[in-house]
Image 1 (cartoon, rainbow, N blue to C red):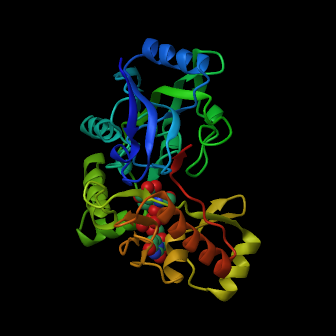
Image 2 (cartoon, rainbow, N blue to C red):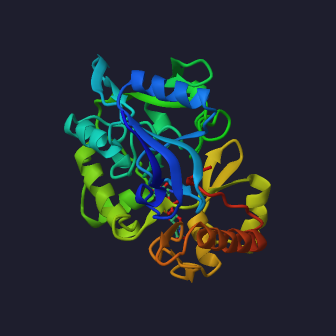
Length: 340
Ligand code: EPU
């Protein structure tokens, strides 16, 4: 296990913005992780766990700590019955390779989350989700290194307090747990409608009426290719903003003014409003703001076209969030985490 110094973070982040990190290391098993974290603690060094870097941004100045990339492998069927298969997966496995394997096994549960750039250990942090599925639907439990006690602990789905794009790992217990494996329970039954609207539209257009995990994976890949810019060619972090969650009274008030505002019921009197719609209504779709292009195909995605760095990104972000706030009285939140 080597510890590298003064590594430019922009080479590791899909937004291609960010200064250097003082230290960076990869760990491929729990002993190495324990050793690295014990050293970091002794030296009082801040740390940040980095997955694929596709949902993380960094500031321009040096990160005075240690970036750890968890590359612990593993893919093991740990339980099986007539209707389900339960698989334990190492944090260092590439998410989409795991989705591909589950689809090859004809299992249902994560196929709509195809092509999400992530490592498995990062997936629970923001409760990844797409096209009608989210990780919380299939995650049974996970194992994590608890930095407060220096030991591996097991957390149940409930312990993780998953909500839309959120879990205890993002804020409440940020920096305490380092995920080392996830355990998912997948289903042997066929995928059944109703499907996410964009998926259903795709099936209708292509006359698809028989649904298998493979059919769904292929449809999602196709839709994503149209909507989401390839980070290898056009640097971006996927959705840069979360969708907004508002209360019933706020929805009623806004619908009086904007009767065509899309909204999705989330239960308990809460509604999800697509932030892409809010941003588009403010006239930003396709615009270049401080070197950041608001994606013409989906205004939630910001593409780094010519930004000089984090400062430009933060100016573009401020312009968008402030304009949305002034017009709709909705405060939209950034999705990517920041190395800080
Ligand atoms: N919309 C607009 N204008 C836009 C974008 C969206 O009006 O520019 C409205 C439309 O009404 C559309 C609705 O928003 O029907 C939903 O749009 P879409 O299906 O493209 O999804 P999204 O809300 O923009 C979310 C996730 C994506 C995920 C898709 C599909 C978040 C923050 N983003 O996007 O996840 O792929 O749904 O499930 O929840 C990511 O997190 O990085 C990501 C790409």
